[in-house]
Length: 402
Image (cartoon, rainbow, N blue to C red; front, side, top):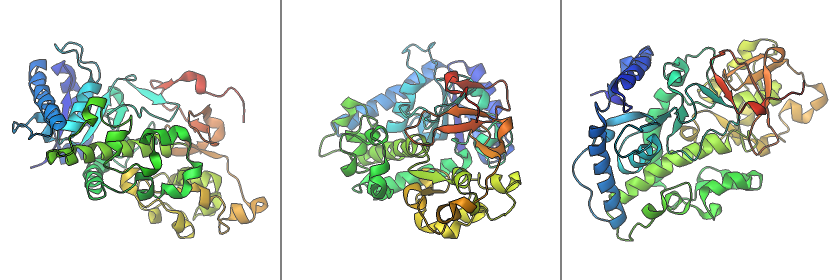
């Protein structure tokens, strides 16, 4: 049986249109069954009632109802934010929360909460949302959202969804098997604690240093909703699964949308070579292909860099951030890097990495903006290849020349 991608909007015609958009990506069509989830809001309400019953059982520590839901079938759930025509007036965000916590669905994509075709110049995404990724419906047919084959507009913050779907299940398993492990210690972030801004640590809760995987959903304001945190000591066994799914989803989003974007705690390959061009295997720094090879979702050995020089700084949990990365504080002073040992002898390049195309372009063809990250590295670039994309907030574009 093939895995399912489930699509829902309270307008079945619109949901069918989105299904067709996804089907234009051949690799997705070949690997998944793509289905419109419900034909009417009434069908949705029936399954939401079951999820609500599970929620009540979770709070009481009693066995869940045996009745299955469509949500349990989905490896990926695509749901619109605006569900105003249904009787309960629930939003897509409400549905995402119930699905994440009280069903066995995989990755959740939220549509149109922040626009139909936007690029977020803050680079923070929307960590408050229980959707694993928030995009516009016009972006559903972008091959770069689903596969490693991309061209033109393709935000670097996106994971490759086909890979991300399988890694989600592995993250849940890790969260279950390491329930009592401290989050910061597990990811190796305790070693760079002094470099992590309070605005980033706050996501973990009031005591981030001793927040474990099983305590994060119960203690953090970014975890379970307040009334769902009151889990009885003698809970039903489903409680550990709920907690692991929430931890797997929310902590991955924390890493990808709050920790990584600053590029000052952990740094990914294209931002790393932008600072240390000597790490490129190719000596031709004017060749965009050498630089673009670093902007791929592969093992470090396939990035075209001297990865062996910096292997001691590698972030060893790639399933959680969907790309290779390294701890910047130690790496920034590593004497085996030419820019560190002989900064006056290093070469520079006119190529800059663009966050909206996941690639390098000549600086004169790009536009500079100020990212909304708590980091020294706030100056970033976009290529703006598609005029239909809404870059926001627009005020983050810099008016100063380089």
